[in-house]
Length: 307
Ligand SMILES: [Zn+2]
Image: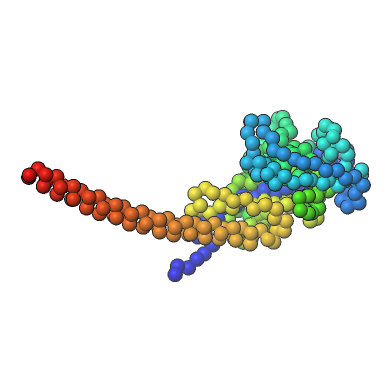
């Protein structure tokens, strides 16, 4: 048996880092983002999928709406207002959050756009009362160095954090609103080829750059990463693993995902071979049959002509 090494798989990784910003208020209202489970307000909603600005339904949103969940929201007046309840239009964008996002973009040498527009990302799992997340593209491109390796930046967005899930009981899903609307910077790197032992260092370096602004939150849950994994023979298929909270898990997450993709490829190759052999067998049987029929027909015709 050939010896298997993860290094032969040509693993490519892209990181998507979500970092909460340390501002005094939320992104589109004056509420203070404080963690508290002392809830005095409770209300419920049902969310359904609607068409996007391009006139299409998002397949993920359609799938989520088939579950037809009732969403219960829990809130208190210190950390949420009518904006979080989607009963009042959003206020002006928080200038502090915008300034921090610009500093982060500049420190990653990313090209900042001269105008910023809030866009909507459809989210109907209940984590947003509106059914969408407000997000602004701040800059594109850029890079940072980790030793001799240059990690490219794809894009940097400023967006609202989602509501915190409290639990699920039967058909009811529960969320707390204290985290909804907290400013968040999303940084997506270009995909890079990586030796698995380096990946933690690469993510840590980016975290360090963010913390050097002294304007980002610390502690569990204040930084979350999604990781995109692909392998050399995977024909461009990229799988996104969401919500890796501990950097120590990153190496294992990438390793297991790359091995899973490699395993699936092996299985598909095996099946193709079996199916291929099956088709050859059917072809041969059919050819033999037709040859037989042809010979019989020829003999019949020959006999008729001779008579
Ligand atoms: Zn508010």
